[in-house]
Image (cartoon, rainbow, N blue to C red; front, top):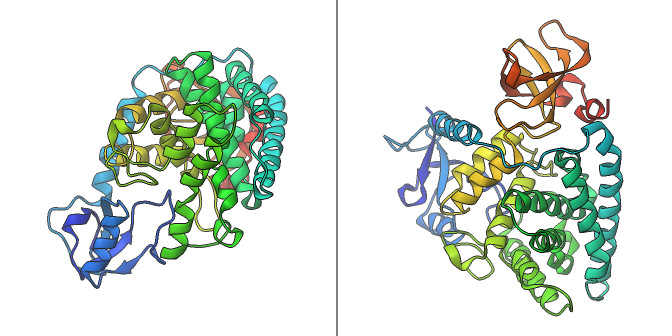
Length: 402
C-alpha cells in the first residue's frame, strides 16, 4: 500500500484518487478523494487541465512502477536545495527588519483599505480608478526596497472575510519583489505592482455565495468562478490609464504553459512574461494562505509544488528565479535548527540555505530563550525543518519586532 503519483493518461477506473494535485484552484469535483468509477471522470480531469494526480493503492488499483509520494518529495527537495545553492536575487535590506516592521504594518493596512474600497465601487458599477491605486503600489515598492522581508512576512497572515483584498495586496508585493529580482526598470515594476493589486477585480462580478463559499465548488459554480479572469480583463480594458501589462496580468494569471488554462487557453510564449510571473505569484500566495477549506502550506512545501507544476502549468525558468527572489526560508518563518532550537528567519543572505535567524526557543527542553541572532553561514548550524508556530504557542511576528 502506498501513495503514488500517476499521469492522467495512466489512470484507470478502479483506482482511488488520493489527491487531485491542483489544490491552488477550486475544481469541479465535490471531493478531493474518491474512487474512479468511469472513463468520463478521467476525461473531466483532462478537460480541466490536470496532468498528474496521486492515487492510494491501499484503497484501489495499483500502477506498478509509478513513483511513490516519498520518492517524488525527495526529488523535489533535491531540486529546491539545488535552487537554493545558487546566488540569491533579493534586494539588499537597507533598513533593519525591526525598523521597517511598523511602516510595513501601516502600509499593509492602508493598501487593504484602498483595495476594499475599489472592489466595493466595482460592485456598485463604478469604474476602477488607477489614480487611487498607484500611490499604494509606490508605498509597497518603497517598503520592499527598504527591507523586502518586512512586508512579505506580514502578507502571509490573512483573515477569511477579507481574503480577496489581502490576497491582492500580497500578490502586488510579491510581483514588485519578483520584478526587482529580474532587473526590470522602475516603470515596469510599477505596472507589475498595479497589475497584482488589480488582478482579481473581476471577482467582484461573481455572486458572493460562490466567491465566499466555505467549501468545494460544483462544476457549474467552478465555471462561473473561472469567468473572473475574463471579467477582470474586460473591466480594465475599459479603464483609462491602465497599461497593457496590467490588463495581461489580470487576464493571464490563470493561463498554463501547456495550454489548458483559462480564459483563452494560451500556451507557452503566447502568455506574456508578466502573465507568467503573475501565475507563479498567485499560486504561491494561495498555497501559503489559510482558507476555510484548506490549511496553508509552509513556504518550502509551496515552493516544491511550484517546482512540481513547472512545465505544464508554470514557466520553469521563472519558477527558479522566483525561488531565488523569495528565498527558501522566507522572513518570518519558524524553523528548527540542527541543535533542536527554534528560530525565526529575520533576514535572507546571498546563500539562501543559510539565512540570519533569531533563536527564541529550546524545543528539546521546552522553554523560551532570550532572543539572539545567528548567521547560519558563519555557524556550525543548519535548518532541519519548518515548524508550525501555533504548536509551540509562538508568534514569529513578535520576534521580528523585537
